[in-house]
Image (cartoon, rainbow, N blue to C red; front, top):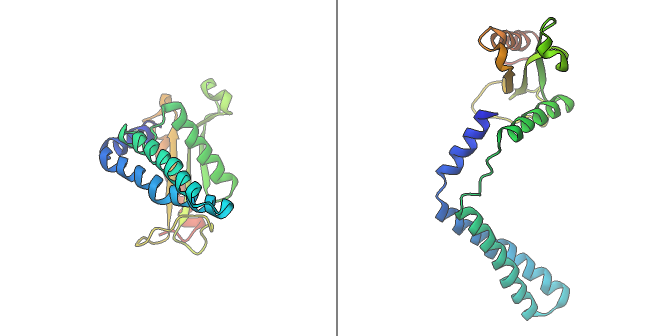
Length: 182
């Protein structure tokens, strides 16, 4: 989660806010406004109403987007709880849709992990660039068939004890025995 937040901050901080503001204005005036103006004209057959809606709504949306982008809000930066939730949702959705394969590390004797039924680490992977890949899997040009690690987390209280390495070893074993990943 912390890495997700830092990446979003880095992306936000690298944006030229003046150029982003102009892009927001363009979206309102060149895309949204004409669509609204055209729809108004098709519905009412009134050119003046169409022009007014183009200017007011397209211009208004453009100004709002421009202001938002100029203030550096064009990139959403999640907080840690939101980033954690996004990872959990991505992890569970990928498993549910059978796009991903998940591996967990379980402790049978540490009461800390009783609420999670012993889960102290987890990772999910997705087979990419393979004939056997799920139709929704992203294809990456220039790479052979491979397993892409999407999310990995080991509880902070048990890090640096080989749990992450054991999960990676299971991924490698799975790749060799159950996929055509290279």
